[in-house]
Length: 277
Ligand SMILES: C[S@@+](CC[C@H](N)C(=O)[O-])C[C@H]1O[C@@H](n2cnc3c(N)ncnc32)[C@H](O)[C@@H]1O
Image (cartoon, rainbow, N blue to C red; front, side, top):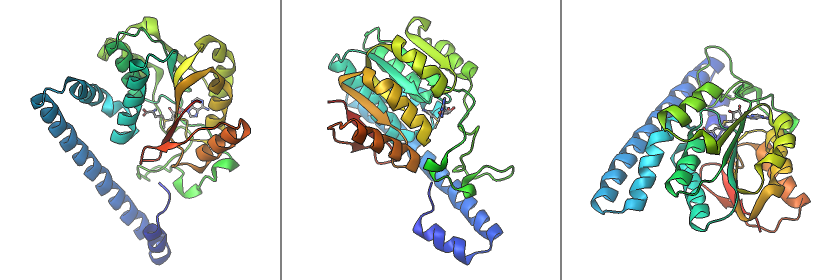
């Protein structure tokens, strides 16, 4: 999270250690508050849709509840991903679902569940280093203050190796916990720069391209390699568009260089999405 105005002022006024303490305390309280609100939301939404006999929304809540602890994208991001995947199913848009930046697999699992529940036999391609984030580059205007250091527990710290999910953990979520079929899901381990140039031929048409690699190079690489496979009417989600300058820069540059005439929509928590014309 970039420093907000209040944080910048406090940072100037307070000695380093005290600022760090206040910052960590405030971050901890904020995370607790969001988690509590989420729990309340899911609880009441479940009851409400049950009583209203709204099967579609109830199914959505149930799917999201199953995977939410395996995702970092939060309630709004999960809802948006769900709705975009479900819209592709309803409109019968051709192509597979792709996630670049899987981590512990929450969003990927959600898209897979949507496909299965619509009996679509749609294929899911999942790409990740399974080693966590790579080094940011100058384009990311990375702040040293965000670099992880032992003992520094702020949940907002990002650094190489952060956002780690393992291949085994994701396999276990998809195939053991959720009982999804291995036939329709391909998990590809490796850096995007190494895997995507080869796999762009294998994925074929794409209905949803979900990009969640945080940095400039990761976002750029995904767009350059996979955008051409996205079908007209398909969706592109850039999870970090408003959160990280590098992700925004890579997206804006790509849209401009290809003269893509589309409107970006925002999910209100840092992500954006658009439809391929
Ligand atoms: C923010 S996490 C993804 C969160 C996930 N979508 C979720 O639902 O929680 C970012 C992921 O991108 C992966 N990643 C970032 N850059 C990458 C690259 N260049 N190649 C492969 N994986 C990358 C990291 O390993 C990490 O798992």
